[in-house]
Length: 168
Image (cartoon, rainbow, N blue to C red; front, side, top):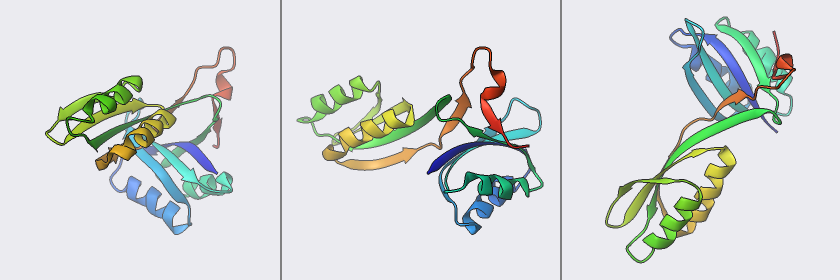
């Protein structure tokens, strides 16, 4: 089962390498890893999507790292997740209309049009991004790159402590 974790770490060199190598050594499959600055000075936030039968074991292992400050698991029912993808699709003049119609349904933006292909940018919920990818796949994928998943909890009215299941 996939679990989405928010890991707040000290913004220091080598922390990303230590986190990813720890997960790999323990045999946990990382589906997505995104790192960026946090709203807290000197801290970065990692959003990690990991496949693990026992997520508690993942959390315990991460807590052993000295630069890890806080770990929280997102509740799947209250999480807001986003990805961005750039995908180049084969599309000669005869197929462009069909491909652009699919793109408009998904709010994908054509960012480059060549003689034989169209490059799209799409951002949104990971399911939306994957659905778009599956619909354009039959036209021929030339190139593809996806960002790591980023996530935040929805604000719950009256229950701020229920947003994340903290493990401190």
